[in-house]
Length: 273
Image 1 (cartoon, rainbow, N blue to C red):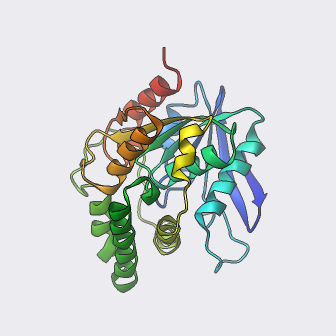
Image 2: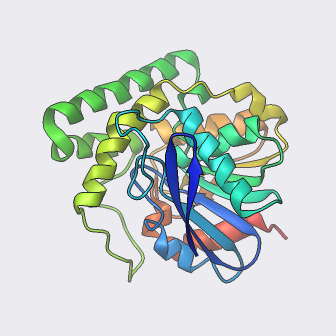
């Protein structure tokens, strides 16, 4: 089932597939509802999987194209989308930017999310002050690089910050191709110009995560370098909520490069024996 949800300032496009408990996947970066198709294919047998285009991406159109989107608006969209598809607490897999949205919902809307798998959240608020400021400046520098040199000139630096080794990532066979077409270029443009700023300006109440009713599962990729921003955030989140970091196959984008093994790990964590 495909749908459009009217939210303040935008229309959200979403897709629902499968049967079983509701699992929302909030994708990283420029990823839209169909970016995770290989992962979704391996979860729909026992989950009702919800995916969507974040506002400003693909089919989720802003009422005012120049308005952009704040982290609070993105998180409110997640809250409203979950309320649209289920009356019960839902589970959520948040990847990178999507993980931060789940953390906001866990604090601001108690009971909306049962379990949140937060894979390498890009959340400076989780870090010690000096490290937090360093990475905020780093993201602002990447925005300037993109404005000056475009995607071709900035993509390698963005990947390096996230610990993604372009051209060196191992993958499972038979993945669905996602060519860099006009839609993806437009989504990258909105993500870098707008959502980098949303991360820089984010006011996540990290302390509030200590008392959230949501079961928060910090996660990180097996091959993500230990020193990079997103991996450090996962470990700081784990220390904050008093748990370990769940290891996933692949690196920062393991949900895309290793969907079979990634889906198996999601099941293990959502339904521990």
